[in-house]
Amino acid sequence: MTPHTTSPSPALAPSNATVDAAGEHALVERIAARARLSGPHVLVGIGDDAAVTRPERGAVEVTTTDSLVEHVHFRRDWTPLAAVGHKALAVNLSDLAAMGAVPRSTFLSLILPADLTVTDFDALVGGFLDLATASRVSLIGGNISRSPGPLIVDVTAVGSVRQRRVLRRVGARAGHELYVTGTLGAAAAGLAMFEAGRRRGNGDPAVDACFDRYERPDARWRVASVIARTGAAAAAIDLSDGLADAARRLAEAAGLGVIVEAGAVPVDPGARVWAEAAGGDALALAVEGGEDYELAFAVAPRQRRKFLAAARRGGHVPVTRVGRFVAEPGAWLERDDGRRNELAAGFVHF
Image (cartoon, rainbow, N blue to C red; front, side):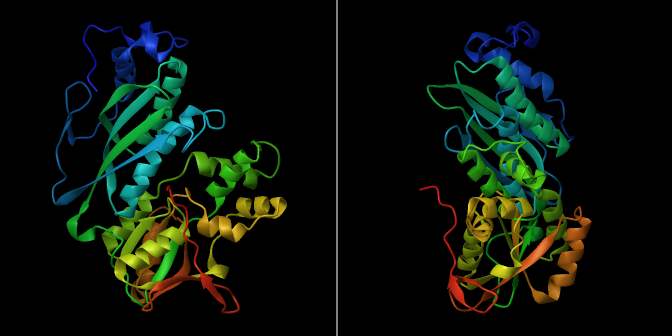
């Protein structure tokens, strides 16, 4: 992002104008005027052709990128653009969390329909920057382009972690336990309710909270960074595509099998109420549904107490043992009576 020195000030771009009328340079200046947070690692931020940062001493950098595409990941008639901005950053912070990294810097690229209003633009950027500020992440660059169709929000995030404390998907061993943070199924329930035409304010607050879990996920980077520093987990992954997908990926990366224990899965209360009222399967929402952005960890039994203590120090995030890794390849859902079914594949994009 490089604001032009002769472009209009942000105040001269009326909020009811379109982004096409406001112009690229004015839009960049609107972002630069609000992106005030920067850490000592930022030597050059918004305003030049590229950013310059100082690596953290004794640490390695972890970089991730992800995009939200209108009509694929969100709909403007369902979700306010402030929530879209929040989620665009949160999904990247979740990827950093899965690696045990503390977020430091981020880049925001916006591909905008020409008729998007400046008011909507400000809401989108505001949601992004509010989460960046709360997470102490510096916005140090990006890009703005025109889109002939959907609104696209593309984010790159950079974090840091000690080299020996990087969490990866590989690392589980037979006999290790599978843990997850938080509760599962709320985001999938929120999406299902949107698709069914339901909106907030029509019932149980726990059910309505599922909308927030879908629109404004909570990236668990704080608890993950504490767990990583203690060395209590052998492997980790985020649950962007659901518990079933995450469990399979952790097992396959290690050449193992995995058993998810149905009775142990922490189904979100709101998701359970919605599923029961709609005649659906709450467990399926929790196991197969995506976008909760919780984390899954492989933990050796001898590290269990250290892992649980680290989770408490990381903000008292609840963690639940939901299964175990076994030597025999495959993935199963185990019922309370011992019956096993093949674990579902989870969400896939194609």
